[in-house]
Amino acid sequence: MPVVPIVLVAAALHASWNALVKSVADRARLMAVMGGATAALAVPLLLLAPLPHAEVWPAIGASVLLHLTYNLLLTASYRDGDYNQVYPIARGTAPPVVAVCSVLLVGERLSGWQVAGLLVVSGGLVVLAAARRHGSPRSVALAVMTGLLIAAYTVLDGVGVRHAGTVAGYSGWLFVGQGLLTALALTAVGRRDPVRAAGGLTVSGLRTPAVARGVAAGALSLAAYMLVLWAQTRGALAVVAALRETSVVFAGLIGAFALGERLPSRRIGASVLVAAGAVVLALG
Image (tube, rainbow, N blue to C red; front, side, top):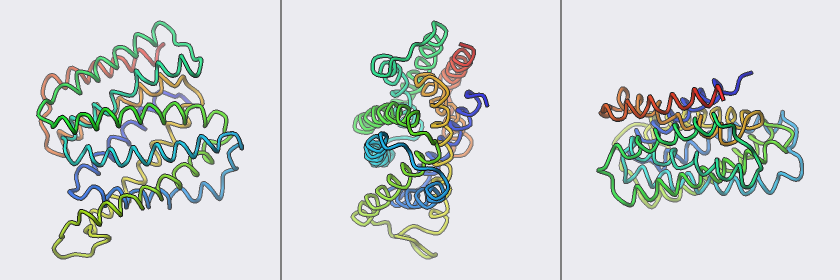
């Protein structure tokens, strides 16, 4: 099965669940629902998949904590910043960092075409990130920190899943752990910052449609990252990371057509750059 289309599907799924999170006012509670849904959906993987090899359990534990911190920072970023600013900054920070780490720490080697494709993708992502300038400095800083966490867990999971002996088993334990911790942490955050919804059935202060969005976001998140983990067992980490961040192109389209955000010509041009870089990566 080819890696490139699988990662592109994962990118579209990732942009979609982030848009669901951004579309709700009380994002802390929605992310809590999402975490619980993700954990519940991942339980069958624990029952059906073999256990990961013993040497990767420390990596799973560390990755659970990194994903938890990522979810907390992402929630804070969306509280202060625009979806079409925070998302590309967070996603665009990761590919060059992953590329450097994959060469220095993992010992991977990239071809000249792959380096060129990575540079083109990264350049397009930088343009996308700089296209919106009205966000607060705090939201930009949080988005950059989120991107560094993405790079950290991408490298850690890329190495871990290759030694786990099972993508499904690694995914199951990772998502049950981080989903439960995220649900607990963000439920506590939501209780300190309640939303007064008028009428309708609620779960922890969220109206029923928002709960449905949280469950949908959890399912999309689980599917997206399982596809990425599978791809990391068959492709270079830097290439998979760069292709995954084409999600910013999908985010631009979702922002324009689903969230009603403006899609300027600069963003369109940058999206073309990202797509061109992805093609070069695929052919390289």
